[in-house]
Image: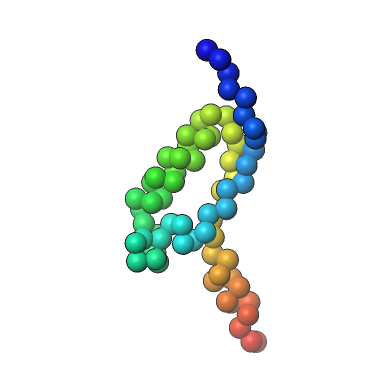
Length: 68
């Protein structure tokens, strides 16, 4: 069997919180999470090391922007 040469050995995957949302645009949809997890696992099983960062940036920015 021929070994496929990978372009990257390690990657960082940044997912926005919105990427996990349901069709109403908020919350976390378990079906979306399950699908993404399967795709991440497939890449991991191919030998790629993966770091996953999940959003929340907008909430952080809004919190930091509030006057004290």
